[in-house]
Image 1 (cartoon, rainbow, N blue to C red):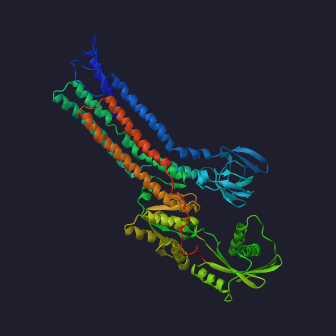
Image 2: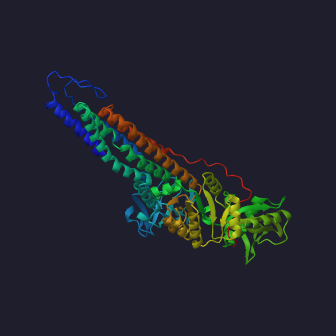
Image 3: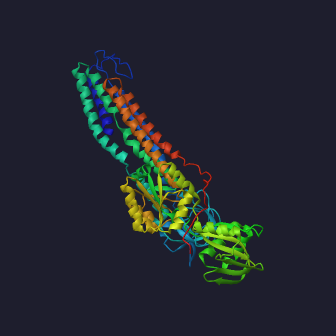
Length: 605
Protein backbone atom coordinates (compact mmCIF):
# COMPACT_ATOMS: atom_id res chain seq x y z
CA UNK A 1 0.00 0.00 0.00
CA UNK A 2 2.81 2.40 0.85
CA UNK A 3 4.35 1.79 -2.59
CA UNK A 4 1.74 3.96 -4.31
CA UNK A 5 2.06 6.87 -1.88
CA UNK A 6 5.86 6.68 -1.93
CA UNK A 7 5.96 6.74 -5.71
CA UNK A 8 3.53 9.66 -5.80
CA UNK A 9 5.61 11.71 -3.37
CA UNK A 10 8.86 10.82 -5.18
CA UNK A 11 7.36 11.79 -8.53
CA UNK A 12 6.09 15.14 -7.16
CA UNK A 13 9.49 15.94 -5.66
CA UNK A 14 11.41 14.86 -8.76
CA UNK A 15 9.24 16.95 -11.07
CA UNK A 16 9.43 19.96 -8.73
CA UNK A 17 13.22 19.68 -8.62
CA UNK A 18 13.34 19.56 -12.41
CA UNK A 19 11.00 22.57 -12.69
CA UNK A 20 12.95 24.55 -10.12
CA UNK A 21 16.37 24.11 -11.70
CA UNK A 22 15.62 23.53 -15.37
CA UNK A 23 12.00 24.49 -16.07
CA UNK A 24 11.97 28.15 -15.20
CA UNK A 25 10.14 27.82 -11.88
CA UNK A 26 13.21 29.17 -10.12
CA UNK A 27 13.52 32.34 -12.22
CA UNK A 28 13.32 35.67 -10.34
CA UNK A 29 9.77 37.08 -10.13
CA UNK A 30 8.11 33.79 -11.06
CA UNK A 31 4.67 33.35 -9.44
CA UNK A 32 2.61 30.14 -9.28
CA UNK A 33 -1.07 30.18 -8.17
CA UNK A 34 -2.29 27.63 -5.57
CA UNK A 35 -5.28 25.51 -6.55
CA UNK A 36 -6.80 22.22 -5.45
CA UNK A 37 -7.17 21.15 -9.09
CA UNK A 38 -4.61 21.33 -11.90
CA UNK A 39 -4.55 24.70 -13.71
CA UNK A 40 -3.45 25.73 -17.15
CA UNK A 41 0.24 26.49 -17.49
CA UNK A 42 1.53 29.94 -18.32
CA UNK A 43 4.47 28.45 -20.16
CA UNK A 44 6.55 27.93 -17.06
CA UNK A 45 6.82 24.55 -15.34
CA UNK A 46 5.11 24.66 -11.93
CA UNK A 47 6.49 23.09 -8.78
CA UNK A 48 4.61 20.68 -6.48
CA UNK A 49 6.81 20.72 -3.43
CA UNK A 50 3.69 21.42 -1.33
CA UNK A 51 2.28 18.12 -2.57
CA UNK A 52 5.51 16.33 -1.59
CA UNK A 53 4.97 17.64 1.94
CA UNK A 54 1.18 17.66 2.06
CA UNK A 55 0.63 14.07 0.89
CA UNK A 56 2.78 12.50 3.66
CA UNK A 57 1.18 14.92 6.13
CA UNK A 58 -2.34 13.76 5.28
CA UNK A 59 -1.31 10.12 5.15
CA UNK A 60 0.51 10.18 8.48
CA UNK A 61 -2.29 12.14 10.16
CA UNK A 62 -4.77 9.56 8.91
CA UNK A 63 -2.56 6.69 10.08
CA UNK A 64 -2.21 8.31 13.50
CA UNK A 65 -5.98 8.58 13.90
CA UNK A 66 -6.40 5.02 12.59
CA UNK A 67 -3.92 3.70 15.14
CA UNK A 68 -5.67 5.47 17.99
CA UNK A 69 -9.03 4.13 16.86
CA UNK A 70 -7.79 0.60 16.23
CA UNK A 71 -6.16 0.52 19.66
CA UNK A 72 -9.66 0.62 21.09
CA UNK A 73 -10.55 -2.66 19.40
CA UNK A 74 -8.00 -4.45 21.61
CA UNK A 75 -9.42 -3.01 24.82
CA UNK A 76 -10.94 -6.34 25.84
CA UNK A 77 -7.61 -8.12 25.42
CA UNK A 78 -5.75 -5.53 27.47
CA UNK A 79 -8.45 -5.70 30.15
CA UNK A 80 -7.95 -9.47 30.36
CA UNK A 81 -4.20 -9.00 30.69
CA UNK A 82 -4.71 -6.57 33.56
CA UNK A 83 -6.75 -9.17 35.46
CA UNK A 84 -3.72 -11.36 36.00
CA UNK A 85 -2.29 -11.03 39.51
CA UNK A 86 1.37 -10.12 39.97
CA UNK A 87 1.82 -11.37 43.57
CA UNK A 88 -0.02 -13.78 45.84
CA UNK A 89 -0.15 -14.45 49.60
CA UNK A 90 0.53 -18.14 50.28
CA UNK A 91 -0.16 -20.01 53.53
CA UNK A 92 1.79 -23.14 54.45
CA UNK A 93 3.78 -24.58 57.34
CA UNK A 94 5.99 -21.50 57.34
CA UNK A 95 3.03 -19.17 57.87
CA UNK A 96 1.82 -16.56 55.38
CA UNK A 97 4.18 -14.96 52.89
CA UNK A 98 3.97 -12.92 49.71
CA UNK A 99 5.49 -14.49 46.57
CA UNK A 100 5.53 -13.63 42.84
CA UNK A 101 2.67 -15.30 40.97
CA UNK A 102 5.20 -17.20 38.82
CA UNK A 103 6.33 -19.14 41.92
CA UNK A 104 2.83 -20.37 42.83
CA UNK A 105 2.40 -24.13 42.34
CA UNK A 106 -0.63 -26.37 42.00
CA UNK A 107 -1.77 -27.59 45.42
CA UNK A 108 -0.57 -24.55 47.36
CA UNK A 109 -3.11 -22.62 49.45
CA UNK A 110 -3.34 -18.87 48.86
CA UNK A 111 -5.30 -16.10 50.55
CA UNK A 112 -7.96 -13.99 48.81
CA UNK A 113 -8.93 -11.01 50.95
CA UNK A 114 -12.03 -8.86 50.39
CA UNK A 115 -11.55 -6.67 47.31
CA UNK A 116 -8.63 -8.71 45.97
CA UNK A 117 -8.53 -10.70 42.73
CA UNK A 118 -8.17 -14.46 42.75
CA UNK A 119 -4.54 -15.15 41.94
CA UNK A 120 -5.34 -18.26 39.89
CA UNK A 121 -7.93 -21.01 39.42
CA UNK A 122 -8.60 -23.00 42.55
CA UNK A 123 -11.02 -24.55 45.04
CA UNK A 124 -12.13 -22.83 48.23
CA UNK A 125 -10.93 -24.75 51.31
CA UNK A 126 -12.02 -22.31 53.99
CA UNK A 127 -14.34 -19.30 54.25
CA UNK A 128 -17.38 -18.10 52.35
CA UNK A 129 -17.90 -15.03 50.21
CA UNK A 130 -19.49 -13.56 47.10
CA UNK A 131 -17.25 -13.53 44.03
CA UNK A 132 -17.63 -11.05 41.18
CA UNK A 133 -17.00 -12.83 37.86
CA UNK A 134 -18.21 -10.02 35.59
CA UNK A 135 -14.78 -9.20 34.14
CA UNK A 136 -13.92 -12.85 33.50
CA UNK A 137 -17.15 -14.52 32.37
CA UNK A 138 -19.55 -11.62 31.92
CA UNK A 139 -21.74 -12.92 34.78
CA UNK A 140 -23.66 -9.89 36.02
CA UNK A 141 -24.49 -11.10 39.54
CA UNK A 142 -21.91 -12.07 42.22
CA UNK A 143 -21.72 -15.81 42.88
CA UNK A 144 -21.73 -17.23 46.42
CA UNK A 145 -18.80 -19.57 47.13
CA UNK A 146 -17.82 -21.73 50.07
CA UNK A 147 -15.65 -24.77 50.88
CA UNK A 148 -15.44 -27.04 47.85
CA UNK A 149 -16.55 -24.35 45.37
CA UNK A 150 -14.27 -23.75 42.36
CA UNK A 151 -13.16 -20.16 41.65
CA UNK A 152 -11.56 -18.56 38.60
CA UNK A 153 -8.37 -16.54 38.54
CA UNK A 154 -9.03 -12.83 37.96
CA UNK A 155 -12.42 -12.87 39.74
CA UNK A 156 -12.86 -10.32 42.54
CA UNK A 157 -13.53 -11.45 46.10
CA UNK A 158 -16.40 -9.15 47.09
CA UNK A 159 -17.01 -10.51 50.60
CA UNK A 160 -15.13 -12.42 53.31
CA UNK A 161 -11.66 -13.90 53.63
CA UNK A 162 -11.08 -17.03 51.52
CA UNK A 163 -8.39 -19.70 51.56
CA UNK A 164 -8.10 -21.25 48.11
CA UNK A 165 -6.13 -24.28 46.94
CA UNK A 166 -4.61 -23.67 43.50
CA UNK A 167 -5.75 -26.16 40.84
CA UNK A 168 -4.13 -24.54 37.78
CA UNK A 169 -1.34 -22.02 37.28
CA UNK A 170 0.23 -20.12 34.41
CA UNK A 171 -0.96 -20.98 30.93
CA UNK A 172 -3.34 -23.66 32.24
CA UNK A 173 -5.72 -21.20 33.95
CA UNK A 174 -9.05 -20.27 32.45
CA UNK A 175 -8.02 -16.62 32.22
CA UNK A 176 -4.95 -17.59 30.19
CA UNK A 177 -7.03 -19.76 27.88
CA UNK A 178 -9.49 -16.89 27.36
CA UNK A 179 -6.67 -14.46 26.59
CA UNK A 180 -5.08 -16.93 24.18
CA UNK A 181 -8.36 -17.51 22.35
CA UNK A 182 -9.01 -13.79 21.94
CA UNK A 183 -5.44 -13.19 20.75
CA UNK A 184 -5.62 -15.99 18.18
CA UNK A 185 -9.03 -14.84 16.99
CA UNK A 186 -7.87 -11.26 16.43
CA UNK A 187 -4.70 -12.38 14.68
CA UNK A 188 -6.53 -14.63 12.21
CA UNK A 189 -8.02 -13.68 8.88
CA UNK A 190 -11.57 -14.25 7.74
CA UNK A 191 -12.38 -15.35 4.22
CA UNK A 192 -13.36 -11.79 3.32
CA UNK A 193 -9.96 -10.52 4.50
CA UNK A 194 -8.13 -13.22 2.55
CA UNK A 195 -10.00 -12.14 -0.58
CA UNK A 196 -9.19 -8.50 0.16
CA UNK A 197 -5.50 -9.36 0.56
CA UNK A 198 -5.51 -11.11 -2.82
CA UNK A 199 -7.31 -8.14 -4.37
CA UNK A 200 -4.77 -5.72 -2.88
CA UNK A 201 -1.94 -7.84 -4.25
CA UNK A 202 -3.37 -7.46 -7.77
CA UNK A 203 -4.57 -3.90 -7.24
CA UNK A 204 -1.16 -2.28 -6.72
CA UNK A 205 0.36 -3.50 -10.02
CA UNK A 206 -2.85 -2.50 -11.82
CA UNK A 207 -2.68 1.03 -10.38
CA UNK A 208 0.98 1.36 -11.33
CA UNK A 209 0.05 0.34 -14.85
CA UNK A 210 -2.80 2.85 -14.87
CA UNK A 211 -0.51 5.65 -13.66
CA UNK A 212 2.00 4.95 -16.44
CA UNK A 213 -0.85 4.70 -18.96
CA UNK A 214 -2.32 8.04 -17.83
CA UNK A 215 1.11 9.69 -18.11
CA UNK A 216 1.61 8.29 -21.59
CA UNK A 217 -1.92 9.20 -22.69
CA UNK A 218 -1.68 12.84 -21.63
CA UNK A 219 1.77 13.25 -23.17
CA UNK A 220 0.59 11.57 -26.34
CA UNK A 221 -2.47 13.79 -26.47
CA UNK A 222 -0.25 16.87 -26.48
CA UNK A 223 -0.78 17.92 -22.87
CA UNK A 224 1.96 19.69 -21.01
CA UNK A 225 4.32 17.43 -19.04
CA UNK A 226 3.37 18.93 -15.69
CA UNK A 227 -0.37 18.25 -16.24
CA UNK A 228 0.39 14.66 -17.25
CA UNK A 229 2.63 14.14 -14.23
CA UNK A 230 0.05 15.73 -11.90
CA UNK A 231 -2.67 13.34 -13.12
CA UNK A 232 -0.33 10.36 -12.83
CA UNK A 233 0.73 11.29 -9.28
CA UNK A 234 -2.91 11.80 -8.23
CA UNK A 235 -3.76 8.31 -9.51
CA UNK A 236 -0.94 6.82 -7.46
CA UNK A 237 -1.96 8.58 -4.27
CA UNK A 238 -5.73 8.33 -4.40
CA UNK A 239 -5.71 4.62 -5.25
CA UNK A 240 -3.79 3.56 -2.13
CA UNK A 241 -5.90 0.60 -0.88
CA UNK A 242 -5.58 1.44 2.83
CA UNK A 243 -9.35 1.25 3.39
CA UNK A 244 -9.41 -2.14 1.69
CA UNK A 245 -6.75 -3.47 4.05
CA UNK A 246 -8.48 -2.07 7.14
CA UNK A 247 -12.02 -3.16 6.22
CA UNK A 248 -11.90 -6.65 7.73
CA UNK A 249 -9.30 -6.76 10.55
CA UNK A 250 -10.72 -3.76 12.40
CA UNK A 251 -14.22 -5.25 12.37
CA UNK A 252 -12.93 -8.66 13.45
CA UNK A 253 -10.93 -7.20 16.33
CA UNK A 254 -13.88 -5.15 17.54
CA UNK A 255 -16.31 -8.08 17.29
CA UNK A 256 -14.10 -10.66 19.01
CA UNK A 257 -13.22 -8.18 21.75
CA UNK A 258 -16.88 -7.37 22.34
CA UNK A 259 -17.72 -11.07 22.34
CA UNK A 260 -15.11 -11.71 25.03
CA UNK A 261 -16.67 -8.98 27.18
CA UNK A 262 -20.07 -10.68 26.83
CA UNK A 263 -18.74 -14.15 27.68
CA UNK A 264 -18.59 -15.51 24.11
CA UNK A 265 -15.14 -16.69 22.99
CA UNK A 266 -14.53 -17.50 19.33
CA UNK A 267 -11.42 -19.38 18.27
CA UNK A 268 -10.92 -17.33 15.10
CA UNK A 269 -12.50 -15.54 12.15
CA UNK A 270 -13.62 -18.84 10.64
CA UNK A 271 -15.73 -19.47 13.75
CA UNK A 272 -17.28 -16.01 13.40
CA UNK A 273 -18.16 -16.80 9.79
CA UNK A 274 -19.60 -20.15 10.89
CA UNK A 275 -21.87 -18.42 13.41
CA UNK A 276 -23.04 -16.03 10.72
CA UNK A 277 -24.16 -18.81 8.36
CA UNK A 278 -25.53 -21.18 10.99
CA UNK A 279 -28.95 -22.70 10.19
CA UNK A 280 -29.17 -25.84 12.40
CA UNK A 281 -28.00 -26.51 15.95
CA UNK A 282 -27.81 -29.89 17.73
CA UNK A 283 -28.42 -29.37 21.45
CA UNK A 284 -27.35 -31.69 24.23
CA UNK A 285 -29.81 -31.98 27.14
CA UNK A 286 -28.10 -32.72 30.43
CA UNK A 287 -25.85 -29.86 31.49
CA UNK A 288 -26.67 -27.80 28.40
CA UNK A 289 -30.41 -27.22 28.34
CA UNK A 290 -30.79 -28.49 31.90
CA UNK A 291 -28.85 -27.69 35.05
CA UNK A 292 -27.17 -31.11 35.12
CA UNK A 293 -28.01 -31.84 38.76
CA UNK A 294 -31.05 -32.83 40.81
CA UNK A 295 -33.34 -29.97 41.85
CA UNK A 296 -36.87 -29.56 43.13
CA UNK A 297 -39.06 -28.86 40.11
CA UNK A 298 -42.50 -28.54 41.75
CA UNK A 299 -44.20 -28.89 45.14
CA UNK A 300 -47.90 -29.75 45.41
CA UNK A 301 -49.49 -29.50 48.88
CA UNK A 302 -52.88 -30.78 50.05
CA UNK A 303 -55.33 -27.84 50.37
CA UNK A 304 -55.96 -26.80 53.96
CA UNK A 305 -52.80 -28.49 55.22
CA UNK A 306 -49.59 -27.10 56.70
CA UNK A 307 -48.69 -25.15 53.58
CA UNK A 308 -46.02 -25.62 50.96
CA UNK A 309 -43.27 -23.65 52.72
CA UNK A 310 -43.61 -25.48 56.05
CA UNK A 311 -43.75 -28.90 54.37
CA UNK A 312 -40.61 -28.14 52.36
CA UNK A 313 -38.89 -27.08 55.59
CA UNK A 314 -39.87 -30.33 57.37
CA UNK A 315 -38.88 -32.53 54.42
CA UNK A 316 -35.54 -30.74 54.06
CA UNK A 317 -34.89 -31.14 57.80
CA UNK A 318 -35.44 -34.89 57.85
CA UNK A 319 -33.37 -35.33 54.67
CA UNK A 320 -30.33 -33.73 56.35
CA UNK A 321 -29.33 -37.20 57.48
CA UNK A 322 -29.51 -38.67 53.95
CA UNK A 323 -26.68 -38.94 51.42
CA UNK A 324 -29.06 -39.80 48.58
CA UNK A 325 -29.11 -37.25 45.67
CA UNK A 326 -32.84 -36.82 46.19
CA UNK A 327 -32.27 -35.98 49.82
CA UNK A 328 -29.53 -33.49 49.06
CA UNK A 329 -31.77 -31.79 46.49
CA UNK A 330 -34.62 -31.49 49.02
CA UNK A 331 -32.35 -30.10 51.73
CA UNK A 332 -30.75 -27.58 49.38
CA UNK A 333 -34.19 -26.43 48.18
CA UNK A 334 -35.43 -26.01 51.76
CA UNK A 335 -32.41 -23.84 52.62
CA UNK A 336 -32.92 -21.70 49.51
CA UNK A 337 -36.64 -21.30 50.28
CA UNK A 338 -35.94 -19.73 53.67
CA UNK A 339 -32.28 -18.65 53.68
CA UNK A 340 -32.63 -16.63 56.87
CA UNK A 341 -33.65 -19.64 59.00
CA UNK A 342 -31.64 -22.76 59.79
CA UNK A 343 -33.33 -26.13 59.39
CA UNK A 344 -34.50 -27.79 62.63
CA UNK A 345 -32.64 -30.83 63.96
CA UNK A 346 -33.84 -34.37 63.16
CA UNK A 347 -34.10 -37.16 65.73
CA UNK A 348 -34.65 -40.92 65.38
CA UNK A 349 -33.56 -40.77 61.75
CA UNK A 350 -34.02 -44.01 59.81
CA UNK A 351 -33.21 -44.68 56.15
CA UNK A 352 -35.63 -47.11 54.54
CA UNK A 353 -33.78 -48.76 51.61
CA UNK A 354 -35.77 -48.47 48.40
CA UNK A 355 -38.51 -46.42 50.08
CA UNK A 356 -37.19 -43.21 51.64
CA UNK A 357 -36.39 -41.76 55.07
CA UNK A 358 -38.16 -41.18 58.38
CA UNK A 359 -37.40 -39.08 61.43
CA UNK A 360 -38.80 -36.76 64.06
CA UNK A 361 -38.65 -33.01 63.54
CA UNK A 362 -39.99 -30.66 66.24
CA UNK A 363 -41.85 -33.58 67.82
CA UNK A 364 -43.57 -34.65 64.58
CA UNK A 365 -43.00 -37.87 62.66
CA UNK A 366 -41.91 -36.84 59.18
CA UNK A 367 -41.65 -39.38 56.36
CA UNK A 368 -40.35 -38.72 52.84
CA UNK A 369 -41.24 -41.79 50.81
CA UNK A 370 -41.84 -43.09 47.33
CA UNK A 371 -45.52 -42.55 46.44
CA UNK A 372 -48.07 -45.35 46.74
CA UNK A 373 -51.61 -45.74 45.42
CA UNK A 374 -53.29 -44.10 48.41
CA UNK A 375 -53.02 -40.45 47.53
CA UNK A 376 -55.47 -37.54 47.80
CA UNK A 377 -56.94 -36.49 44.41
CA UNK A 378 -54.78 -33.36 44.20
CA UNK A 379 -51.60 -35.34 44.73
CA UNK A 380 -52.75 -38.13 42.39
CA UNK A 381 -53.04 -35.58 39.57
CA UNK A 382 -49.63 -34.19 40.40
CA UNK A 383 -48.18 -37.72 40.35
CA UNK A 384 -49.58 -38.32 36.87
CA UNK A 385 -48.06 -35.07 35.61
CA UNK A 386 -44.75 -35.98 37.22
CA UNK A 387 -44.65 -39.32 35.42
CA UNK A 388 -45.42 -37.62 32.10
CA UNK A 389 -42.53 -35.22 32.66
CA UNK A 390 -40.25 -38.12 33.69
CA UNK A 391 -39.44 -36.59 37.07
CA UNK A 392 -38.93 -38.47 40.34
CA UNK A 393 -41.81 -37.91 42.82
CA UNK A 394 -41.72 -38.31 46.62
CA UNK A 395 -44.53 -37.81 49.13
CA UNK A 396 -44.24 -36.06 52.48
CA UNK A 397 -46.20 -37.52 55.39
CA UNK A 398 -46.67 -35.76 58.72
CA UNK A 399 -47.73 -38.01 61.61
CA UNK A 400 -49.00 -40.57 59.08
CA UNK A 401 -51.03 -38.13 56.94
CA UNK A 402 -49.96 -37.52 53.34
CA UNK A 403 -49.52 -33.77 53.00
CA UNK A 404 -47.51 -33.06 49.81
CA UNK A 405 -45.90 -34.46 46.68
CA UNK A 406 -42.49 -33.08 45.67
CA UNK A 407 -41.14 -33.60 42.16
CA UNK A 408 -37.37 -33.78 41.76
CA UNK A 409 -35.53 -33.76 38.48
CA UNK A 410 -32.89 -32.17 36.31
CA UNK A 411 -34.68 -28.86 35.73
CA UNK A 412 -34.24 -26.71 32.64
CA UNK A 413 -31.93 -23.73 32.85
CA UNK A 414 -33.98 -20.53 32.99
CA UNK A 415 -32.30 -19.27 29.82
CA UNK A 416 -33.12 -22.39 27.79
CA UNK A 417 -36.63 -21.20 26.98
CA UNK A 418 -35.46 -17.87 25.62
CA UNK A 419 -32.42 -19.38 23.91
CA UNK A 420 -34.35 -21.87 21.79
CA UNK A 421 -37.03 -19.33 20.93
CA UNK A 422 -34.49 -16.70 19.88
CA UNK A 423 -32.55 -19.23 17.78
CA UNK A 424 -35.78 -20.18 16.05
CA UNK A 425 -36.50 -16.53 15.28
CA UNK A 426 -33.01 -16.19 13.80
CA UNK A 427 -33.84 -19.00 11.37
CA UNK A 428 -31.79 -21.67 13.16
CA UNK A 429 -33.40 -25.13 13.40
CA UNK A 430 -33.04 -26.67 16.90
CA UNK A 431 -32.46 -30.44 17.23
CA UNK A 432 -32.30 -32.25 20.59
CA UNK A 433 -29.82 -35.14 20.88
CA UNK A 434 -29.27 -36.78 24.27
CA UNK A 435 -28.05 -40.01 25.78
CA UNK A 436 -31.01 -39.93 28.20
CA UNK A 437 -34.18 -42.03 27.89
CA UNK A 438 -37.02 -41.25 25.51
CA UNK A 439 -39.46 -39.93 28.14
CA UNK A 440 -37.21 -37.23 29.66
CA UNK A 441 -35.99 -36.21 26.22
CA UNK A 442 -39.55 -35.87 24.91
CA UNK A 443 -40.58 -33.89 28.00
CA UNK A 444 -37.77 -31.38 27.52
CA UNK A 445 -38.46 -31.13 23.79
CA UNK A 446 -42.18 -30.53 24.40
CA UNK A 447 -41.44 -27.84 26.95
CA UNK A 448 -39.07 -26.05 24.54
CA UNK A 449 -41.15 -26.80 21.43
CA UNK A 450 -38.32 -28.69 19.73
CA UNK A 451 -39.79 -30.94 17.05
CA UNK A 452 -36.83 -33.21 16.25
CA UNK A 453 -35.68 -35.39 19.16
CA UNK A 454 -33.01 -38.11 19.26
CA UNK A 455 -32.84 -40.03 22.57
CA UNK A 456 -30.39 -42.67 23.85
CA UNK A 457 -27.69 -41.28 21.54
CA UNK A 458 -24.17 -42.64 21.94
CA UNK A 459 -21.24 -40.36 21.00
CA UNK A 460 -21.10 -42.19 17.68
CA UNK A 461 -24.84 -41.57 17.14
CA UNK A 462 -24.40 -37.84 17.73
CA UNK A 463 -21.52 -37.68 15.26
CA UNK A 464 -23.59 -39.61 12.71
CA UNK A 465 -26.53 -37.21 13.22
CA UNK A 466 -24.23 -34.27 12.49
CA UNK A 467 -23.00 -35.92 9.28
CA UNK A 468 -26.59 -36.62 8.22
CA UNK A 469 -27.67 -33.01 8.75
CA UNK A 470 -24.65 -31.72 6.83
CA UNK A 471 -25.46 -34.07 3.94
CA UNK A 472 -28.95 -32.53 3.89
CA UNK A 473 -27.35 -29.14 3.24
CA UNK A 474 -27.49 -27.69 6.74
CA UNK A 475 -24.62 -25.74 8.28
CA UNK A 476 -24.60 -27.42 11.66
CA UNK A 477 -23.47 -26.34 15.10
CA UNK A 478 -23.32 -28.68 18.10
CA UNK A 479 -23.72 -27.40 21.66
CA UNK A 480 -22.43 -29.69 24.42
CA UNK A 481 -20.52 -29.85 27.67
CA UNK A 482 -19.33 -33.42 28.17
CA UNK A 483 -16.71 -35.86 26.93
CA UNK A 484 -19.47 -37.68 25.04
CA UNK A 485 -20.06 -34.54 22.97
CA UNK A 486 -16.44 -34.08 21.85
CA UNK A 487 -16.72 -36.16 18.64
CA UNK A 488 -19.86 -34.33 17.50
CA UNK A 489 -18.32 -30.94 18.40
CA UNK A 490 -15.25 -31.69 16.30
CA UNK A 491 -17.28 -33.03 13.35
CA UNK A 492 -19.75 -30.15 13.10
CA UNK A 493 -19.33 -27.03 10.99
CA UNK A 494 -19.17 -25.22 14.32
CA UNK A 495 -18.59 -26.70 17.78
CA UNK A 496 -19.94 -24.72 20.74
CA UNK A 497 -18.97 -25.72 24.27
CA UNK A 498 -20.45 -24.62 27.57
CA UNK A 499 -17.84 -22.91 29.73
CA UNK A 500 -18.93 -25.07 32.66
CA UNK A 501 -18.22 -28.24 30.66
CA UNK A 502 -15.22 -30.53 30.46
CA UNK A 503 -11.83 -29.50 29.08
CA UNK A 504 -12.23 -32.11 26.32
CA UNK A 505 -15.45 -30.48 25.10
CA UNK A 506 -13.97 -26.98 25.29
CA UNK A 507 -10.85 -28.10 23.45
CA UNK A 508 -12.91 -29.59 20.60
CA UNK A 509 -15.11 -26.51 20.21
CA UNK A 510 -14.77 -23.43 18.03
CA UNK A 511 -16.86 -21.23 20.33
CA UNK A 512 -17.05 -21.31 24.14
CA UNK A 513 -19.92 -19.83 26.14
CA UNK A 514 -17.86 -18.87 29.20
CA UNK A 515 -20.76 -18.37 31.60
CA UNK A 516 -22.33 -21.72 30.71
CA UNK A 517 -25.48 -19.81 29.74
CA UNK A 518 -26.95 -21.13 26.49
CA UNK A 519 -28.93 -17.94 26.02
CA UNK A 520 -25.73 -16.19 24.94
CA UNK A 521 -25.65 -18.45 21.85
CA UNK A 522 -28.32 -16.33 20.16
CA UNK A 523 -26.31 -13.21 21.06
CA UNK A 524 -23.23 -14.82 19.50
CA UNK A 525 -25.11 -15.46 16.25
CA UNK A 526 -26.41 -11.88 16.17
CA UNK A 527 -22.96 -10.45 16.92
CA UNK A 528 -21.41 -12.54 14.12
CA UNK A 529 -24.04 -11.34 11.66
CA UNK A 530 -23.47 -7.74 12.70
CA UNK A 531 -19.70 -8.14 12.33
CA UNK A 532 -19.87 -9.64 8.85
CA UNK A 533 -22.47 -7.07 7.83
CA UNK A 534 -20.03 -4.36 8.93
CA UNK A 535 -17.24 -6.01 6.92
CA UNK A 536 -19.41 -6.05 3.80
CA UNK A 537 -20.19 -2.33 4.21
CA UNK A 538 -16.48 -1.59 4.72
CA UNK A 539 -15.46 -3.51 1.59
CA UNK A 540 -18.25 -1.89 -0.43
CA UNK A 541 -17.01 1.55 0.62
CA UNK A 542 -13.36 0.67 -0.01
CA UNK A 543 -14.03 -0.57 -3.54
CA UNK A 544 -16.60 2.15 -4.27
CA UNK A 545 -14.20 4.87 -3.20
CA UNK A 546 -11.60 3.71 -5.72
CA UNK A 547 -14.18 3.30 -8.47
CA UNK A 548 -15.17 6.97 -8.07
CA UNK A 549 -11.84 8.67 -7.29
CA UNK A 550 -9.45 6.91 -9.67
CA UNK A 551 -11.30 8.08 -12.83
CA UNK A 552 -11.40 11.64 -11.42
CA UNK A 553 -7.65 11.51 -10.91
CA UNK A 554 -7.10 10.08 -14.40
CA UNK A 555 -8.89 12.98 -16.10
CA UNK A 556 -6.92 15.52 -14.06
CA UNK A 557 -9.63 16.69 -11.63
CA UNK A 558 -7.76 15.79 -8.43
CA UNK A 559 -4.75 17.56 -7.01
CA UNK A 560 -2.31 15.11 -5.29
CA UNK A 561 -2.92 16.73 -1.89
CA UNK A 562 -6.68 16.50 -2.29
CA UNK A 563 -6.21 12.86 -3.33
CA UNK A 564 -4.17 12.19 -0.17
CA UNK A 565 -6.87 13.79 2.01
CA UNK A 566 -9.61 11.70 0.34
CA UNK A 567 -7.59 8.52 0.82
CA UNK A 568 -7.07 9.26 4.54
CA UNK A 569 -10.74 10.09 5.09
CA UNK A 570 -11.79 6.81 3.46
CA UNK A 571 -9.60 4.85 5.88
CA UNK A 572 -11.00 6.72 8.87
CA UNK A 573 -14.57 6.05 7.76
CA UNK A 574 -13.83 2.31 7.56
CA UNK A 575 -12.25 2.25 11.02
CA UNK A 576 -15.08 4.32 12.50
CA UNK A 577 -17.69 1.99 11.05
CA UNK A 578 -15.90 -1.02 12.57
CA UNK A 579 -15.64 0.61 15.99
CA UNK A 580 -19.43 0.73 16.23
CA UNK A 581 -19.22 -2.98 17.09
CA UNK A 582 -17.58 -2.09 20.40
CA UNK A 583 -20.92 -0.64 21.52
CA UNK A 584 -22.97 -3.61 20.25
CA UNK A 585 -25.57 -4.69 22.80
CA UNK A 586 -27.24 -8.11 23.21
CA UNK A 587 -30.99 -8.40 23.24
CA UNK A 588 -32.48 -7.43 26.61
CA UNK A 589 -33.45 -10.38 28.77
CA UNK A 590 -37.20 -10.40 28.92
CA UNK A 591 -39.65 -12.54 30.87
CA UNK A 592 -39.61 -16.24 30.22
CA UNK A 593 -42.05 -17.22 27.44
CA UNK A 594 -45.05 -19.16 28.69
CA UNK A 595 -45.03 -22.90 28.06
CA UNK A 596 -47.66 -25.60 28.44
CA UNK A 597 -45.56 -27.70 30.80
CA UNK A 598 -43.34 -27.18 33.84
CA UNK A 599 -39.56 -27.62 33.70
CA UNK A 600 -38.47 -31.16 32.97
CA UNK A 601 -36.59 -33.88 33.61
CA UNK A 602 -33.68 -36.13 34.32
CA UNK A 603 -33.02 -39.82 34.59
CA UNK A 604 -35.03 -41.33 37.47
CA UNK A 605 -32.87 -42.87 40.16
